[in-house]
Length: 476
Ligand code: AMP
Ligand code: ZN
Image (cartoon, rainbow, N blue to C red; front, side, top):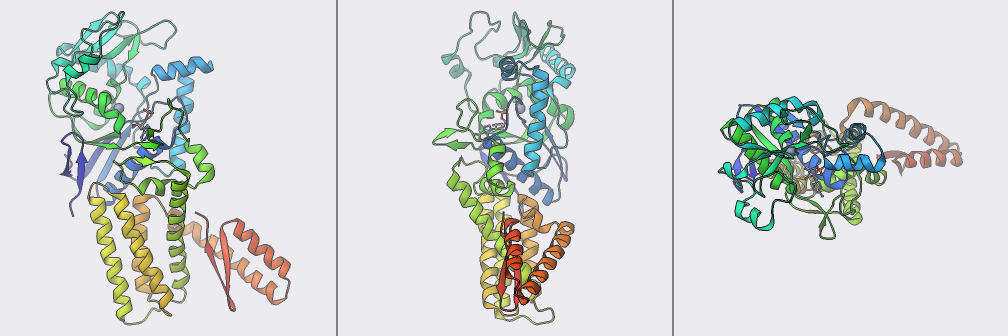
């Protein structure tokens, strides 16, 4: 099965072939760290997490780099407002970002470079651009001369003439043309600054990603990603800088995520229509948030609503319920047997759904379609379990193996498949269930009920089926 990915650069789906066999090098633009991450950020980073997990599942070694923009106008402005030191402010929100991503089960990047730790590399890169005639010094900074890079616009489709129409060089700006962008900004009073051949100052925004990606991934690599809003100008400018400097094609596949939307508008800090990851985590489990995100293809817009999240929660609960049904059925499953028609029917259903799942994921990581296949397995198994007195262990195992694949790629059902923790937890629940049965026999119902209520509070539901009591996890 071959993987196809939609490349923003060519505007079509292409077969995915990494530059080096067996290895995928990817760079995802990280956050500007001055505030708490919101659901829009979570969507983008969960999407790239699943892309990365799927590539790993397919057998690739993935090397993933994500930057932290830890110096920038927004950080300086926020630090002024709160009276903090910009460096401390950035440090604080790097920590917050890492904590939030960890809570959302987003696997950490392998390398997290920060702008302020790469000023020397950035200066060297700008010097090269100057030597090659792409950069010039103006009175307030060093600029990239866009018209010198002949392929400018190849990612976003933007034309230099269009850029000139709406813009002009403001008084006080030292650039030659309105479309030129800053590589280095000369220091204004009171701003953080570093020494450079052009006097004290700090880097522009775009240069950091050209510099830090090539430092850790080499002068050409496979995947570069970010949200849609980064296509222009950020990624367009990154391409111009990198290809001007290296003299060859830089990135193979450009991947971009759609926005999280609120009432038709992009969720963003500036519009104030955002919900932070922390707020959401108080109401929904990390897996529900992931599930909510994965119900849509990563390039489509995703509407934020409480009903949407509640819907995701219900759907995830249905799947957990199936997993619990399988676990309970395992205890009455037959081990030595031959298969009959019903068994073959479920086997076929699992086999076909598994194929569909991989086809969907191979089709530009279509998690929305892939989830449909997961529900097909869930429905087939539930039907089988209601109808079959003695289910076959092999069939249940086939279903569990499939759910385990889904778990690894989507980062859901993780607790279910965590063996060590489950064993002790299950033993403890069994002890309580036995004690409760004994209490019921002795007609000490108040204590028996207390055990049931306390377990329910912890997300464990007891069901009395005649003489027997079974338990289920009900919280997701
Ligand atoms: P920022 O910290 O604003 O630079 O954003 C970090 C990443 O989150 C970028 O890749 C953005 O494109 C992405 N992002 C920001 N807002 C949203 C949103 N509403 N939906 C999806 N991605 C977003
Ligand atoms: Zn970037």
